[in-house]
Length: 134
Image (cartoon, rainbow, N blue to C red):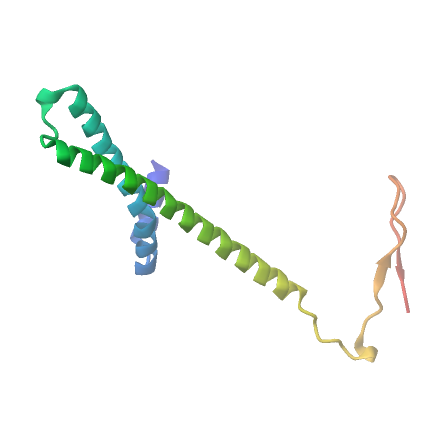
């Protein structure tokens, strides 16, 4: 129940751009769901004619073909969106790494503190020492 409340609260606080992004992600999934429903109706109608979900044979086949195409293109769109999200994530990660690697301006020689460097790797139980170079 807490998860539902948190999710609803997050949806209420969303900005318009977030809503648009959410709709763009949900539309292909909704298309797959509806196309699947039409395919099920097509199959039921072929097995049980008296239910009469679809009466015209031409429209049945056209709807079936449209449903298959919808599923195909919706899956392609979902894959494209995920690929774009991963590329954006990698781009941001790369930018953050480059920002961290950016050289810092060197301080004047007199203001530089002596650099500390570690001695040889220590063995278990041995005290770690640090040597300072001058």
